[in-house]
Image: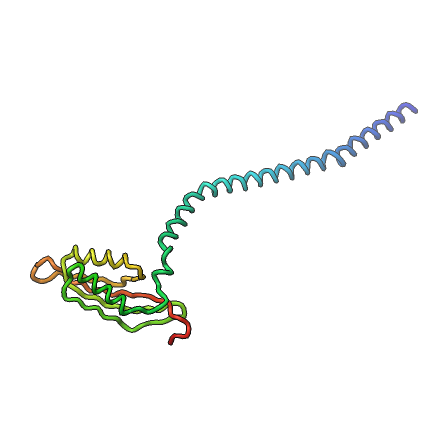
Length: 180
């Protein structure tokens, strides 16, 4: 009987040691291992996303440069003063340079906001389509922002090859503070 008790005690102690090992060593290590695997998976996902985003970087850089080129001289194209007379004179000179006839350049009623003011300008002239096209191309190249809002080209009734151009445009300037 003493031997049986000894074996039972040994078995109980063995079960206790194994249970203690499983409960206090194996299970916590398994939890820690799973937590580390999850962290690794999350880090791999972050790395994959970063890699995908880094491949988009050159395209985004190109877009940024393109936008900077398009808007780079915006501040210079919107002067701080009205300078309407000077601008209308430049339009008339452009029309003359391209041999456009029956010129009419007429400013409209000025519209103002806190940051920007707008002056509508109606332009009319007559000439060959190539001359009108070249006028628009040069108008676009001016150092002042001009927004073409409406263009109407009408063939002359005598089929002379000339078109009558009517354009509604707007020019902009930044009003100086304290100005009416």
